[in-house]
Figure 1 (tube, rainbow, N blue to C red):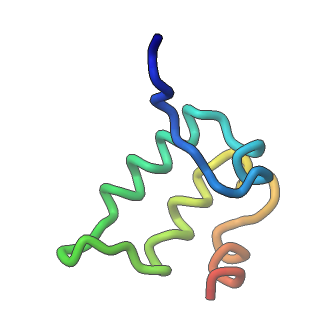
Figure 2 (figure 1 turned 180 degrees about the horizontal axis):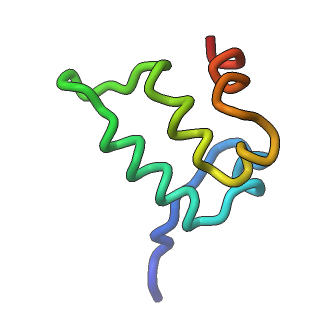
Length: 69
């Protein structure tokens, strides 16, 4: 029996909006954006989120900045 290796999102709506490939890609990009303190700032997120298909269909990068800001 193998264990689940995917990315789990606590919000079911968000979970349904992304494929596991997209979620793994976002997680990888998120981890690569961590600064020297091991943190990601709000300013780092919009360019990453704008690359995801589900976000591109709904928002552009400036709209994402507005939502997060």
